[in-house]
Image (cartoon, rainbow, N blue to C red; front, side, top):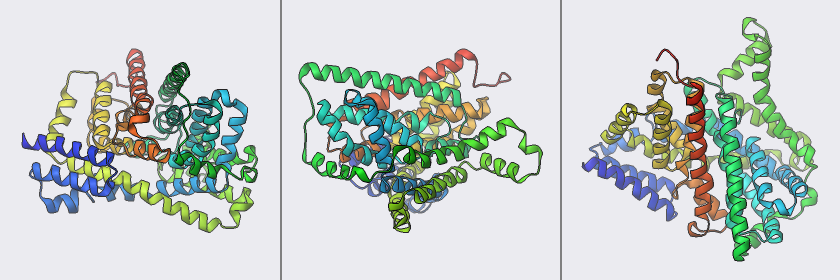
Length: 466
Protein backbone atom coordinates (compact mmCIF):
# COMPACT_ATOMS: atom_id res chain seq x y z
CA UNK A 1 0.00 0.00 0.00
CA UNK A 2 2.77 2.44 0.96
CA UNK A 3 4.59 1.64 -2.27
CA UNK A 4 1.57 2.47 -4.43
CA UNK A 5 1.02 5.69 -2.50
CA UNK A 6 4.69 6.50 -3.08
CA UNK A 7 4.29 5.99 -6.80
CA UNK A 8 1.31 8.35 -6.87
CA UNK A 9 3.14 10.87 -4.68
CA UNK A 10 6.24 10.74 -6.91
CA UNK A 11 4.14 11.30 -10.03
CA UNK A 12 2.12 14.12 -8.46
CA UNK A 13 5.30 15.79 -7.24
CA UNK A 14 6.90 15.51 -10.69
CA UNK A 15 3.88 17.17 -12.28
CA UNK A 16 3.84 19.91 -9.63
CA UNK A 17 7.56 20.64 -9.93
CA UNK A 18 7.41 20.67 -13.75
CA UNK A 19 4.55 23.17 -13.69
CA UNK A 20 6.49 25.36 -11.26
CA UNK A 21 9.42 25.41 -13.68
CA UNK A 22 11.83 23.49 -11.45
CA UNK A 23 14.79 22.00 -13.33
CA UNK A 24 13.86 18.55 -14.67
CA UNK A 25 17.11 16.96 -13.44
CA UNK A 26 16.43 18.06 -9.88
CA UNK A 27 12.73 17.21 -10.12
CA UNK A 28 13.27 13.74 -11.55
CA UNK A 29 15.94 12.86 -8.97
CA UNK A 30 13.81 14.02 -6.03
CA UNK A 31 10.77 12.16 -7.33
CA UNK A 32 12.85 9.05 -7.99
CA UNK A 33 14.01 9.15 -4.37
CA UNK A 34 10.38 9.48 -3.18
CA UNK A 35 9.49 6.38 -5.19
CA UNK A 36 12.57 4.49 -3.97
CA UNK A 37 12.11 5.26 -0.28
CA UNK A 38 8.43 4.33 -0.27
CA UNK A 39 9.02 1.12 -2.20
CA UNK A 40 11.95 -0.28 -0.27
CA UNK A 41 14.57 0.31 -2.97
CA UNK A 42 18.14 0.95 -1.84
CA UNK A 43 19.04 4.60 -2.23
CA UNK A 44 22.54 3.78 -3.45
CA UNK A 45 21.21 1.33 -6.03
CA UNK A 46 18.57 3.84 -7.13
CA UNK A 47 21.03 6.69 -7.62
CA UNK A 48 23.92 4.70 -9.06
CA UNK A 49 22.16 2.00 -11.07
CA UNK A 50 18.41 2.24 -11.71
CA UNK A 51 18.31 5.98 -12.47
CA UNK A 52 21.55 6.43 -14.45
CA UNK A 53 22.73 3.12 -15.94
CA UNK A 54 20.00 0.48 -15.74
CA UNK A 55 18.24 -0.91 -18.78
CA UNK A 56 16.07 2.22 -18.60
CA UNK A 57 18.71 4.49 -17.13
CA UNK A 58 19.02 8.12 -18.11
CA UNK A 59 22.54 7.74 -19.47
CA UNK A 60 21.79 4.40 -21.08
CA UNK A 61 19.20 6.20 -23.18
CA UNK A 62 21.42 9.23 -23.73
CA UNK A 63 24.30 7.08 -24.93
CA UNK A 64 22.15 5.07 -27.32
CA UNK A 65 20.43 8.04 -28.98
CA UNK A 66 23.13 10.70 -28.63
CA UNK A 67 24.10 10.48 -32.30
CA UNK A 68 20.54 11.06 -33.53
CA UNK A 69 19.96 14.02 -31.21
CA UNK A 70 23.33 15.51 -32.20
CA UNK A 71 22.77 15.22 -35.94
CA UNK A 72 19.17 16.45 -35.67
CA UNK A 73 20.18 19.52 -33.69
CA UNK A 74 22.99 20.36 -36.12
CA UNK A 75 20.62 20.11 -39.08
CA UNK A 76 18.08 22.30 -37.31
CA UNK A 77 20.75 24.86 -36.51
CA UNK A 78 22.08 25.13 -40.06
CA UNK A 79 18.53 25.39 -41.46
CA UNK A 80 17.82 28.22 -39.03
CA UNK A 81 21.17 30.04 -39.42
CA UNK A 82 21.04 29.90 -43.22
CA UNK A 83 17.43 31.17 -43.01
CA UNK A 84 16.35 28.24 -45.19
CA UNK A 85 13.63 27.35 -42.69
CA UNK A 86 12.44 30.97 -42.72
CA UNK A 87 12.42 31.02 -46.52
CA UNK A 88 10.17 27.96 -46.66
CA UNK A 89 7.83 29.46 -44.06
CA UNK A 90 7.60 32.76 -45.96
CA UNK A 91 6.90 31.02 -49.28
CA UNK A 92 4.01 29.04 -47.82
CA UNK A 93 2.69 32.13 -46.05
CA UNK A 94 2.65 34.11 -49.30
CA UNK A 95 0.98 31.22 -51.11
CA UNK A 96 -1.84 30.56 -48.65
CA UNK A 97 -2.38 34.10 -47.39
CA UNK A 98 -3.56 35.67 -44.14
CA UNK A 99 -7.05 34.18 -44.38
CA UNK A 100 -5.50 30.76 -43.91
CA UNK A 101 -3.19 31.72 -41.06
CA UNK A 102 -3.96 28.58 -39.06
CA UNK A 103 -3.35 26.35 -42.07
CA UNK A 104 -0.06 28.17 -42.75
CA UNK A 105 1.14 27.45 -39.23
CA UNK A 106 0.22 23.79 -39.39
CA UNK A 107 1.60 23.12 -42.90
CA UNK A 108 4.94 24.88 -42.34
CA UNK A 109 5.57 23.14 -39.02
CA UNK A 110 4.60 19.77 -40.46
CA UNK A 111 6.87 20.21 -43.48
CA UNK A 112 9.86 21.30 -41.42
CA UNK A 113 9.55 18.60 -38.74
CA UNK A 114 8.94 15.83 -41.26
CA UNK A 115 12.00 17.07 -43.12
CA UNK A 116 14.14 16.57 -40.03
CA UNK A 117 14.18 20.01 -38.37
CA UNK A 118 13.86 19.63 -34.59
CA UNK A 119 10.66 20.89 -32.96
CA UNK A 120 12.14 23.74 -30.91
CA UNK A 121 13.89 25.19 -33.99
CA UNK A 122 10.55 25.10 -35.80
CA UNK A 123 8.80 26.90 -32.93
CA UNK A 124 11.49 29.60 -32.79
CA UNK A 125 11.33 30.00 -36.58
CA UNK A 126 7.56 30.16 -36.90
CA UNK A 127 6.62 32.30 -33.92
CA UNK A 128 8.32 35.55 -35.03
CA UNK A 129 6.83 35.15 -38.50
CA UNK A 130 3.48 34.23 -37.03
CA UNK A 131 3.19 37.48 -35.07
CA UNK A 132 2.67 39.46 -38.27
CA UNK A 133 0.11 36.96 -39.51
CA UNK A 134 -1.74 36.92 -36.18
CA UNK A 135 -1.84 40.72 -36.09
CA UNK A 136 -3.17 41.03 -39.64
CA UNK A 137 -5.71 38.23 -39.20
CA UNK A 138 -6.62 39.32 -35.63
CA UNK A 139 -6.03 35.72 -34.56
CA UNK A 140 -5.89 34.82 -30.84
CA UNK A 141 -2.42 33.55 -29.94
CA UNK A 142 -3.83 30.47 -28.20
CA UNK A 143 -5.07 29.21 -31.58
CA UNK A 144 -1.72 29.84 -33.28
CA UNK A 145 -0.08 27.74 -30.57
CA UNK A 146 -2.59 24.95 -31.20
CA UNK A 147 -2.23 25.04 -35.00
CA UNK A 148 1.57 24.96 -34.94
CA UNK A 149 1.46 22.16 -32.36
CA UNK A 150 -0.65 20.07 -34.74
CA UNK A 151 2.07 20.32 -37.36
CA UNK A 152 5.11 20.04 -35.11
CA UNK A 153 3.97 17.79 -32.28
CA UNK A 154 1.47 15.21 -33.51
CA UNK A 155 1.39 13.28 -36.80
CA UNK A 156 4.89 14.09 -38.08
CA UNK A 157 6.26 13.06 -34.69
CA UNK A 158 4.61 9.64 -34.34
CA UNK A 159 2.48 8.62 -37.31
CA UNK A 160 4.02 9.41 -40.70
CA UNK A 161 6.42 6.70 -41.97
CA UNK A 162 10.01 7.51 -42.87
CA UNK A 163 10.50 10.46 -40.52
CA UNK A 164 13.80 10.59 -38.59
CA UNK A 165 11.92 11.50 -35.39
CA UNK A 166 13.16 9.97 -32.14
CA UNK A 167 9.85 8.10 -31.71
CA UNK A 168 10.17 6.36 -35.06
CA UNK A 169 13.78 5.47 -34.31
CA UNK A 170 13.05 4.15 -30.79
CA UNK A 171 10.40 1.79 -32.14
CA UNK A 172 12.55 0.63 -35.06
CA UNK A 173 15.67 0.02 -32.97
CA UNK A 174 13.69 -1.90 -30.33
CA UNK A 175 11.62 -4.08 -32.65
CA UNK A 176 14.05 -4.63 -35.52
CA UNK A 177 11.71 -2.87 -37.96
CA UNK A 178 12.52 0.07 -40.22
CA UNK A 179 11.32 3.68 -40.24
CA UNK A 180 8.51 2.83 -42.66
CA UNK A 181 6.90 0.13 -40.52
CA UNK A 182 3.11 0.24 -40.43
CA UNK A 183 3.19 2.96 -43.04
CA UNK A 184 -0.37 2.80 -44.30
CA UNK A 185 -1.96 2.87 -40.86
CA UNK A 186 0.37 5.70 -39.91
CA UNK A 187 -0.81 7.72 -42.90
CA UNK A 188 -4.43 7.04 -41.91
CA UNK A 189 -3.78 8.25 -38.34
CA UNK A 190 -1.93 11.31 -39.67
CA UNK A 191 -4.90 12.29 -41.83
CA UNK A 192 -7.21 11.98 -38.83
CA UNK A 193 -4.93 14.11 -36.63
CA UNK A 194 -4.43 16.79 -39.28
CA UNK A 195 -8.06 16.85 -40.42
CA UNK A 196 -9.69 16.87 -36.99
CA UNK A 197 -7.07 19.22 -35.59
CA UNK A 198 -7.55 21.82 -38.30
CA UNK A 199 -11.35 21.53 -38.11
CA UNK A 200 -11.18 22.17 -34.38
CA UNK A 201 -8.91 25.23 -34.50
CA UNK A 202 -10.87 26.76 -37.39
CA UNK A 203 -14.09 26.20 -35.44
CA UNK A 204 -12.54 27.84 -32.38
CA UNK A 205 -11.49 30.80 -34.54
CA UNK A 206 -15.07 31.29 -35.75
CA UNK A 207 -16.25 31.29 -32.14
CA UNK A 208 -13.55 33.80 -31.21
CA UNK A 209 -14.67 36.17 -34.00
CA UNK A 210 -18.24 36.06 -32.73
CA UNK A 211 -17.16 36.99 -29.21
CA UNK A 212 -14.77 39.71 -30.38
CA UNK A 213 -11.63 37.90 -29.20
CA UNK A 214 -8.54 38.68 -31.23
CA UNK A 215 -4.78 39.15 -31.17
CA UNK A 216 -3.38 40.71 -27.99
CA UNK A 217 0.24 41.79 -28.17
CA UNK A 218 2.65 41.46 -25.28
CA UNK A 219 6.32 42.19 -24.57
CA UNK A 220 7.36 38.71 -25.70
CA UNK A 221 5.90 39.38 -29.16
CA UNK A 222 7.98 42.51 -29.62
CA UNK A 223 11.19 40.69 -28.65
CA UNK A 224 10.49 37.72 -30.89
CA UNK A 225 9.31 39.78 -33.86
CA UNK A 226 12.77 41.31 -34.15
CA UNK A 227 14.03 37.86 -35.13
CA UNK A 228 11.94 38.03 -38.30
CA UNK A 229 13.93 40.98 -39.74
CA UNK A 230 16.34 40.79 -42.70
CA UNK A 231 14.07 38.48 -44.67
CA UNK A 232 15.79 39.61 -47.87
CA UNK A 233 18.81 37.54 -46.83
CA UNK A 234 16.80 34.32 -46.94
CA UNK A 235 17.62 32.04 -49.91
CA UNK A 236 15.01 31.21 -52.59
CA UNK A 237 12.48 28.74 -51.22
CA UNK A 238 13.22 26.13 -53.87
CA UNK A 239 16.89 26.11 -52.88
CA UNK A 240 15.88 26.10 -49.21
CA UNK A 241 13.93 22.87 -49.78
CA UNK A 242 16.94 21.00 -51.18
CA UNK A 243 18.53 20.02 -47.82
CA UNK A 244 15.21 18.58 -46.61
CA UNK A 245 14.83 16.65 -49.85
CA UNK A 246 18.35 15.28 -49.31
CA UNK A 247 17.46 14.11 -45.80
CA UNK A 248 14.20 12.44 -46.78
CA UNK A 249 15.63 11.10 -50.03
CA UNK A 250 18.57 9.51 -48.22
CA UNK A 251 16.16 7.80 -45.83
CA UNK A 252 13.63 6.74 -48.47
CA UNK A 253 15.81 5.78 -51.45
CA UNK A 254 17.22 2.55 -49.96
CA UNK A 255 13.69 1.40 -49.15
CA UNK A 256 12.59 2.06 -52.74
CA UNK A 257 15.62 0.31 -54.24
CA UNK A 258 15.21 -2.72 -51.97
CA UNK A 259 11.61 -2.93 -53.09
CA UNK A 260 12.52 -2.84 -56.78
CA UNK A 261 15.23 -5.50 -56.70
CA UNK A 262 16.53 -8.25 -54.44
CA UNK A 263 19.83 -6.60 -53.59
CA UNK A 264 20.31 -8.96 -50.66
CA UNK A 265 20.96 -11.83 -53.06
CA UNK A 266 24.14 -10.29 -54.42
CA UNK A 267 27.44 -9.17 -52.95
CA UNK A 268 27.59 -5.73 -54.59
CA UNK A 269 28.58 -2.58 -52.77
CA UNK A 270 25.16 -1.06 -53.43
CA UNK A 271 23.50 -4.11 -51.96
CA UNK A 272 25.63 -3.91 -48.82
CA UNK A 273 24.84 -0.22 -48.40
CA UNK A 274 21.12 -0.85 -48.81
CA UNK A 275 21.12 -3.67 -46.31
CA UNK A 276 23.12 -1.52 -43.90
CA UNK A 277 20.56 1.27 -44.16
CA UNK A 278 17.73 -1.15 -43.40
CA UNK A 279 19.50 -2.59 -40.35
CA UNK A 280 20.61 0.71 -38.78
CA UNK A 281 17.58 2.77 -37.67
CA UNK A 282 19.78 5.12 -35.63
CA UNK A 283 22.92 5.47 -37.74
CA UNK A 284 21.24 5.79 -41.15
CA UNK A 285 18.87 8.70 -40.36
CA UNK A 286 21.73 10.38 -38.51
CA UNK A 287 23.84 10.13 -41.66
CA UNK A 288 20.92 11.54 -43.66
CA UNK A 289 20.73 14.55 -41.32
CA UNK A 290 24.47 15.19 -41.65
CA UNK A 291 24.23 14.98 -45.44
CA UNK A 292 21.42 17.55 -45.25
CA UNK A 293 23.62 19.78 -43.07
CA UNK A 294 26.55 19.54 -45.49
CA UNK A 295 24.17 20.35 -48.34
CA UNK A 296 23.27 23.57 -46.51
CA UNK A 297 26.95 24.48 -46.28
CA UNK A 298 27.42 23.92 -50.02
CA UNK A 299 24.29 25.85 -51.04
CA UNK A 300 24.25 28.84 -48.70
CA UNK A 301 27.28 31.21 -48.78
CA UNK A 302 26.44 32.94 -45.50
CA UNK A 303 26.72 29.58 -43.78
CA UNK A 304 30.07 28.68 -45.35
CA UNK A 305 31.76 31.63 -43.64
CA UNK A 306 31.27 30.12 -40.18
CA UNK A 307 30.20 26.53 -40.78
CA UNK A 308 32.33 25.06 -38.01
CA UNK A 309 30.93 27.50 -35.47
CA UNK A 310 27.33 26.78 -36.50
CA UNK A 311 27.90 23.03 -36.32
CA UNK A 312 29.35 23.54 -32.84
CA UNK A 313 26.33 25.58 -31.76
CA UNK A 314 24.06 22.84 -33.07
CA UNK A 315 26.01 20.28 -31.08
CA UNK A 316 25.59 22.42 -27.96
CA UNK A 317 21.86 22.72 -28.66
CA UNK A 318 21.50 18.93 -28.70
CA UNK A 319 22.63 18.43 -25.10
CA UNK A 320 19.70 19.86 -23.16
CA UNK A 321 16.89 18.17 -25.14
CA UNK A 322 18.76 14.86 -24.91
CA UNK A 323 19.37 15.14 -21.17
CA UNK A 324 15.84 16.42 -20.46
CA UNK A 325 14.42 13.35 -22.17
CA UNK A 326 16.95 11.11 -20.43
CA UNK A 327 16.01 12.56 -17.02
CA UNK A 328 12.36 11.54 -17.27
CA UNK A 329 13.41 8.13 -18.56
CA UNK A 330 15.69 7.78 -15.53
CA UNK A 331 12.69 8.49 -13.30
CA UNK A 332 10.72 5.92 -15.24
CA UNK A 333 13.58 3.46 -14.86
CA UNK A 334 13.20 3.70 -11.08
CA UNK A 335 9.41 3.31 -11.34
CA UNK A 336 9.80 0.09 -13.33
CA UNK A 337 11.75 -1.45 -10.45
CA UNK A 338 8.80 -1.22 -8.07
CA UNK A 339 6.25 -3.88 -7.25
CA UNK A 340 3.49 -1.46 -8.20
CA UNK A 341 4.72 -1.21 -11.78
CA UNK A 342 5.10 -5.00 -11.96
CA UNK A 343 1.49 -5.39 -10.82
CA UNK A 344 0.35 -2.83 -13.39
CA UNK A 345 2.25 -4.63 -16.16
CA UNK A 346 0.77 -7.97 -15.14
CA UNK A 347 -2.72 -6.52 -14.92
CA UNK A 348 -2.61 -4.75 -18.29
CA UNK A 349 -1.33 -7.90 -19.99
CA UNK A 350 -4.03 -10.08 -18.45
CA UNK A 351 -7.01 -7.75 -18.70
CA UNK A 352 -9.73 -8.99 -21.03
CA UNK A 353 -9.34 -6.64 -23.99
CA UNK A 354 -8.01 -6.95 -27.55
CA UNK A 355 -4.18 -6.88 -27.62
CA UNK A 356 -3.94 -3.67 -29.64
CA UNK A 357 -6.21 -1.86 -27.18
CA UNK A 358 -3.99 -3.18 -24.41
CA UNK A 359 -0.97 -1.72 -26.22
CA UNK A 360 -2.73 1.63 -26.45
CA UNK A 361 -3.62 1.61 -22.76
CA UNK A 362 -0.16 0.59 -21.53
CA UNK A 363 1.79 3.06 -23.70
CA UNK A 364 -0.61 5.88 -22.85
CA UNK A 365 -0.32 5.32 -19.10
CA UNK A 366 3.48 5.15 -19.13
CA UNK A 367 3.76 8.26 -21.33
CA UNK A 368 1.40 10.11 -19.00
CA UNK A 369 3.50 9.15 -15.98
CA UNK A 370 6.73 10.57 -17.37
CA UNK A 371 5.15 13.40 -19.39
CA UNK A 372 7.16 12.42 -22.45
CA UNK A 373 6.14 10.50 -25.55
CA UNK A 374 9.71 9.42 -26.33
CA UNK A 375 10.31 8.52 -22.69
CA UNK A 376 7.07 6.57 -22.42
CA UNK A 377 7.74 4.76 -25.68
CA UNK A 378 11.26 3.78 -24.63
CA UNK A 379 10.00 2.41 -21.29
CA UNK A 380 7.23 0.48 -23.03
CA UNK A 381 9.61 -1.02 -25.57
CA UNK A 382 12.01 -2.19 -22.87
CA UNK A 383 9.40 -3.59 -20.47
CA UNK A 384 6.15 -4.57 -22.17
CA UNK A 385 6.72 -4.82 -25.93
CA UNK A 386 8.23 -8.35 -25.82
CA UNK A 387 5.06 -9.66 -24.17
CA UNK A 388 2.88 -8.23 -26.94
CA UNK A 389 5.12 -9.77 -29.57
CA UNK A 390 4.62 -13.12 -27.83
CA UNK A 391 0.86 -12.57 -28.13
CA UNK A 392 1.33 -12.51 -31.89
CA UNK A 393 1.15 -8.81 -32.70
CA UNK A 394 3.20 -8.17 -35.81
CA UNK A 395 6.30 -6.03 -35.12
CA UNK A 396 5.42 -3.51 -37.86
CA UNK A 397 1.95 -2.93 -36.44
CA UNK A 398 3.25 -2.76 -32.86
CA UNK A 399 5.84 -0.20 -34.02
CA UNK A 400 3.28 2.18 -35.45
CA UNK A 401 0.46 1.77 -32.94
CA UNK A 402 2.81 2.14 -29.97
CA UNK A 403 4.40 5.26 -31.49
CA UNK A 404 1.01 6.87 -32.16
CA UNK A 405 -0.26 5.95 -28.69
CA UNK A 406 2.83 7.51 -27.09
CA UNK A 407 1.88 10.88 -28.60
CA UNK A 408 -1.41 11.22 -26.74
CA UNK A 409 -1.41 11.35 -22.95
CA UNK A 410 2.21 12.48 -22.95
CA UNK A 411 1.04 16.08 -23.47
CA UNK A 412 -0.48 16.55 -20.04
CA UNK A 413 0.31 19.87 -18.27
CA UNK A 414 3.70 18.63 -16.97
CA UNK A 415 4.98 17.71 -20.45
CA UNK A 416 8.30 19.47 -21.08
CA UNK A 417 7.42 20.31 -24.69
CA UNK A 418 4.14 21.92 -23.61
CA UNK A 419 5.86 24.00 -20.93
CA UNK A 420 8.63 25.10 -23.31
CA UNK A 421 6.21 26.00 -26.12
CA UNK A 422 4.05 28.15 -23.85
CA UNK A 423 7.15 29.80 -22.40
CA UNK A 424 8.53 30.65 -25.84
CA UNK A 425 5.23 32.21 -26.89
CA UNK A 426 4.66 34.10 -23.66
CA UNK A 427 1.46 32.29 -22.65
CA UNK A 428 0.27 30.49 -19.54
CA UNK A 429 -1.45 27.14 -19.15
CA UNK A 430 -4.64 29.00 -18.22
CA UNK A 431 -4.56 30.98 -21.47
CA UNK A 432 -3.71 28.27 -24.00
CA UNK A 433 -3.61 24.75 -22.56
CA UNK A 434 -7.25 23.90 -23.29
CA UNK A 435 -6.69 24.16 -27.04
CA UNK A 436 -3.33 22.39 -26.77
CA UNK A 437 -5.00 19.59 -24.83
CA UNK A 438 -7.56 19.01 -27.57
CA UNK A 439 -5.09 18.92 -30.48
CA UNK A 440 -2.20 17.11 -28.77
CA UNK A 441 -4.09 14.75 -26.43
CA UNK A 442 -7.74 14.22 -27.37
CA UNK A 443 -7.36 14.08 -31.15
CA UNK A 444 -4.22 11.85 -31.20
CA UNK A 445 -6.05 9.47 -28.83
CA UNK A 446 -9.03 9.42 -31.21
CA UNK A 447 -6.69 8.82 -34.17
CA UNK A 448 -5.01 5.91 -32.40
CA UNK A 449 -8.31 4.30 -31.41
CA UNK A 450 -9.69 4.68 -34.94
CA UNK A 451 -6.51 3.14 -36.34
CA UNK A 452 -6.89 0.19 -33.99
CA UNK A 453 -10.55 -0.15 -35.00
CA UNK A 454 -9.57 -0.27 -38.68
CA UNK A 455 -6.88 -2.89 -38.00
CA UNK A 456 -9.26 -5.03 -35.95
CA UNK A 457 -11.96 -4.79 -38.63
CA UNK A 458 -9.45 -5.96 -41.24
CA UNK A 459 -8.03 -8.68 -39.02
CA UNK A 460 -4.57 -7.11 -39.34
CA UNK A 461 -1.99 -6.98 -36.59
CA UNK A 462 -2.28 -10.36 -34.94
CA UNK A 463 -0.99 -13.61 -36.44
CA UNK A 464 -3.78 -16.11 -37.18
CA UNK A 465 -1.90 -18.84 -35.33
CA UNK A 466 -2.34 -17.11 -31.94
